[in-house]
Amino acid sequence: MNRGITFVVVAIIYLVVLISLAVIGNRKNKGNEEQFFLAGGDVGTIIGFLTFFATLYSTFILIGMPNFFRVHGVGTWIFLGVTDMVLAVFTLWLAMKMGKRIASVDYRSMSDLLRNGFGKLGIVVYVIGLVIFLVPYIAIQVKGASGLLSNVVPYDVPQWVWAITILLLMYVYSSIGGLRGIMYADSLQGIMLFTVIWIMAAIVLMDFGGVKELIATVKETKPELLSTPGPKGLLNVQWLLAAFISIVLLPVSQPQLTSRLGILKGFNERRKVPVLHASFTFLLLIAGLIIGLYGAIAIPASNGPEFIGKLILEQHAVLGAVTLIGILAAAMSTSDSQFFALGSEINNVFGSYSKKLKLSPVIFVKIVILILCVASFIVAMKSPQELISLAINGFMGTALMAPMVLVSVLYKDIDFSSVIPIFTAASLIVFLLSLFGFAPNMISGIRLDLLLLSINTIATIIVVVIRSKPGSAQSAPKI
Amino acid sequence: MNFWRVAGFVVFILATLAFTPLVIPYGVAEPFVLGLPRTLWAGMLISLLIYIVLLIAMFTSKDES
Image 1 (cartoon, each protein chain N blue to C red):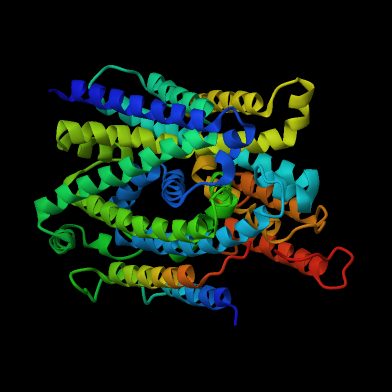
Image 2: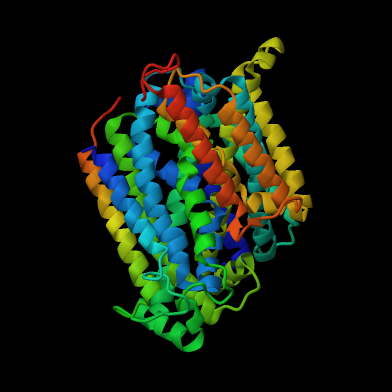
């Protein structure tokens, strides 16, 4: 069987399973609104882990991560390995706090917690921040995956057709199955992602005889990959620190991750999911390291998609096809959850308008997701440099909102007035200005994003200490 | 003392260590341990230690809700 037919067969099997999972999710929802938005709030350990894993790891983990090892060397382990273990510890702590906080409120999305402490202003800043940084992020994922598919799939299908296919598929199964359908699809996608990357790593290891032999070859041919800051000098302390902070804060700065912690069934699920996540992440990164270092020796390429494309063409036709579908799955597993979370948050802000239009929240969210899909398609196809910059810096952009979101998780029934949302909005505006070249990105040798996050965090702590101290008119129990 | 404060402190120290020249010395790959360059084995060791803190946290954490 040639590569083309193999791809079509694997793609059809994948599509059938994907849509079946969405239909199963739909049946379990039984037309219930809470089931559609929160999957009943009783997600078990395995589905909880797989959906968190697949949602966190986008196409970056299949394309970007091995390519990072290939281009920048072993310092990438600090950027991802150390960072992801700290992320898991933070996730466990946050999951415990979320469990307690959710129990005290009628929870539908993160906006419900923000409304409690920051009112409408807090929610508006949060939602606008999410749209500004997440839509370009989704768009470059769609662009990356569709570009790779159009180059590697042995049929003459233009990139825009692949982009529409990815977005349409996401829209269909999200609309059918709601959050439960998305989580089932994530589970399938998480398993595919992990399996594919390890099969490729195992093939490389068999070729070389082991990691030791692989590194010995790198030492002979490209020794600069074995130390920091790497051949291009990227992995310096400030860069690593900024990446560390923006990644560790993801569980609180990205609503699709925070909400997943909020809907776990109980205490056992909340404590087991982060540990499972850390365990599989460790293994995933080892696979990425092996593939990346192999690429540095054997696969010359100018960028990540080209490198992975060449690697796929080296594999057996079935493995190549499964890898391509794995990349498609990785792009969808993060973007579907981001769309759904954005839709839920926007519904929380503009819910009153949907009532005036006599639209149910479910229909309203489906319309919002459709609009976001169209916006992402336009951005993906046009993608001017400024928007690419927004996407690349998306994690740091949303991290600037993390202090505000964290306060909303930790404290209830305290009016933090408008100071924190105003500080958050100001830091977002300054950060955006720097991305568009209207403000410097370094001040006195320190990265602007690190400075903004520090100022924002200090301001937030001061407001919280003043407002929540015993005896204050506003004081109320901490969660 | 609150367990999370201790765990947070230990993780903070370990993570900070990862950004020092002990783990990421400029342009230095030696010493190699088990065939792995310094940044890699030291980074993996720190990741493993943080993972152990995570395991302890999992087993000792109490239901707060």
